[in-house]
Length: 112
Length: 508
Image (cartoon, rainbow over the protein chains, first blue to last red):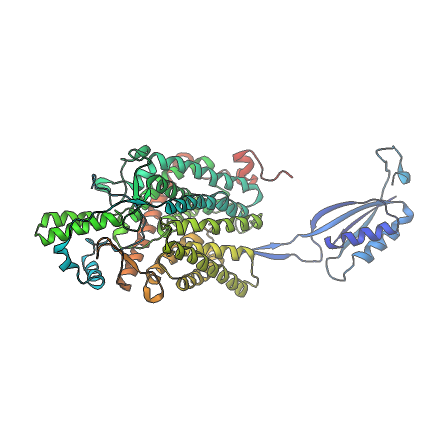
């Protein structure tokens, strides 16, 4: 099993979810996050007081899939979330040791 | 003076400065009514009836609650949205608590100090004869600005109470996010007692149209009869007004008493308390400009009660004040927005809202005096100047007036007070300076004299700055010495909501 963590632009979330559902992904976790990478932040001005906002809003997806599906998931996210502009995000893939479905007690691939 | 039917009113005219400014007043007399001296011999003592108009009472009752709407929730939300999430409730609590406490002080002794005869101190402050509203009941009346038209004293007390409540509430913006709640409450009690009530008395304490007509007639009769003592007594009565009133200064709805007063107290406060921890380093961005927008909008709505209600009657000057409160406000909002767009690149909502409040402040002293076109000029000027001050000067000076109490209320208050002296000129579309004594019993428009008028306004402004500045400084230092004004640094970092009030604004 693989855990795929992706940070993407918030407005791409729905598009990515749809594309992933189409290739057979049946669940994901989504968190609103802030971060910084290649994309620099912006400046906010309140009555002349300027604040540099270095952390920009992103959405983090966490998806656990069977090993066979991992590459397709990564490709799909990369393709769908891409805008060709700085700040499109990153994707990380990690090994997962164990999984369990709380309701049934099923484990590993059966639990996904 | 004790036994005279002297009541209080609002500074809508400067012409009563008769004895203090004989030359100017005489000029006005000559201009407006050349026949007065001849007619004096034939004058009978001025007799008048007191008519209470139900329309006036209804309008003033609505105005009173409109001003309350400005404070809670208006001002509270306007300020609350501008602080960080961790301090939201502290600001809301401060504004709300000040309102409630000052209400109680007002009816116990505040009203008496502001609007009763002050004996030997009468130029500066009232006395204690109306403590606990002694002598006031449903039959006592106060004068309006029209001869023979009076208002129930209860209505007047309630209306003026809201002014006493909003003024100290304005100050808290200057040292938001770092003041100890308990110390603030003590400071506010002292501040209204020693600064606000005397200021209100100095600006708004006068006898009213009927009293002036009565005394002026008595004076003319005494002069015609060669009774110097009686003439002097009447002249003294005519001059027995508050100090700033006698300067001949115009302040329709409280530019000096409310806005310059609060603005200066705020400026001194932010300097005495010092900058917030992390100022210039941490982000202190407003936590909810949505709240601030709601607050600013409620301020605008409520301000019609403040400005147009200050006319005390429901007549054509009320209409003028309402229109001016639209025109100047819109002009200042637009001016700030475009100035910011031009110089900072983007038209911000906060800029627009700040401009709107600036315009409301600036038009406050001018509401019943300037014409609508004059009000637009006043608003445009105030909007640009206050923007430049707040966006450049304040930051360059590293002055942490957190919510710009001085930059908006102080600055626009001063611009408005001085502007009123210019825009009242009928040649500029103004309503002119009311004159109740040239032809006793009628309202005349006095001749406009720029040098006199502008000097009077400037004197009132300078006096207010000094009185409020020095007085507030002493009170801050006193409270600081006894109980400390500022919260501990760790409390400031944690936020006042949890540390001082034990609750959080948003449990989501």
